[in-house]
Amino acid sequence: MTRLITDWICDMENSAAGWDRELKKLTGAGYREIGSMVSGWSAESISEAAECEKVAVVPVTSGLGTISTFAESVAAIVRAMGFETFVTEGTDVNGIYEAHVKDADIVFMADDDRYIALNIRDGSIGDNNIATASGYVELLNKMAGEISGRKAAVLGYGIIGQLMAQFLADKGADVAVFDKNPDKKQSAISDGYQWIDDSEELRLYKYIADGTSEGNWLSEDMLAEDVLIAAPGIPFSLTETAQKKLEGRYVHDLLEIGTAGMLGLAI
Ligand code: 2YJ
Image 1 (cartoon, rainbow, N blue to C red):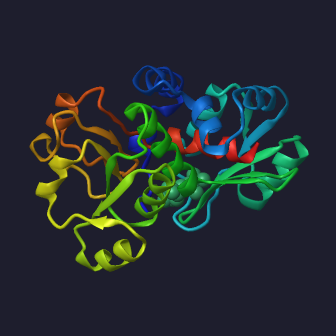
Image 2 (image 1 turned 45 degrees about the horizontal axis):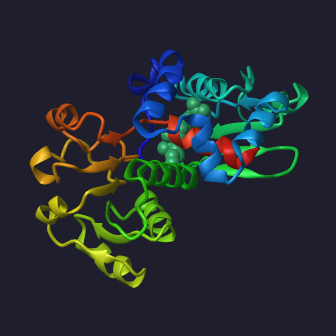
């Protein structure tokens, strides 16, 4: 699991609202729609929740400690969804207590292993892995028009790749898995998916869900010309040239799509 670093997210407080608009242009869905698609709540329910539910973000010092601007970045995404949001002054358990005293309904918090949104009134929870995988699959489905019955490749069979394969299969896609580690082949096949032996075969897939975390390995010559990519993997797989060439054909961000889905699950 990739740990975010400050350099990557230092501008997110300023860029979060703009990316929401950009996502809408690219896919037809912004943060609120992602929250709705991931959770099954209607757009109206999300709007109602934004009117009455307050969100706190608690910095967590355990393990490798806080990432400067992480909590503020999460708050900016939640704010862009229209929710009243604050970052607690206290950290860890003290911060959770502060969130409660200040009347928060939902608490966002992350340590080195897990990032969650917990509704402290009714116990509902949004896990970042599930929300991220589901959010990106929903966006790929929207970009595709409808992914059902189509061939989709999942790159990387780790936590996010496995979840994306499952969400794609749930939508009726014909899923094939590529992972550079051949030891993953057995589990992908026993989970009911096809296996892609060679990265050369990726050109045959128009729809790609990329959960790899190597960065900078996927060039345009390895991909179909009309490819559509949903890529939660960090660092981003597409080379800089591929990013330019394929502009408008992929979605990738560091925190926003997953966070929007988590809020949907926690309202
Ligand atoms: O509060 C803080 O500033 C830190 N404790 C945030 C830590 C963020 N955690 C991560 O980036 C981990 N890799 C877990 C993220 C889960 C993504 N699926």
